[in-house]
Length: 90
Image 1 (cartoon, helix red, strand yellow):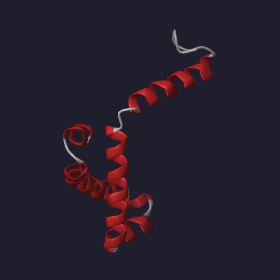
Image 2 (cartoon, one colour):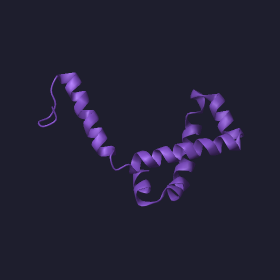
Image 3 (cartoon, rainbow, N blue to C red):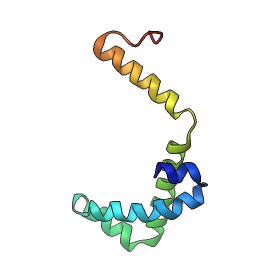
């Protein structure tokens, strides 16, 4: 999914992501049967969920500051769990 997002615009990413979301909902049907029923029986609900999920996934994957934010989070977690971080991070 990352490669698809990085190589395409959001609309083209959605062509793959929307189908994958259907698979994910079906694979997890036993975990939330009410959601699955609503998702597959209500086209407006399904459309809204797909749009929100697609936009969020695309933004997360393509956000240029993502790597920097993850590095800061990892450094913070390291400091909290060990009392010190990598050189230059403290």
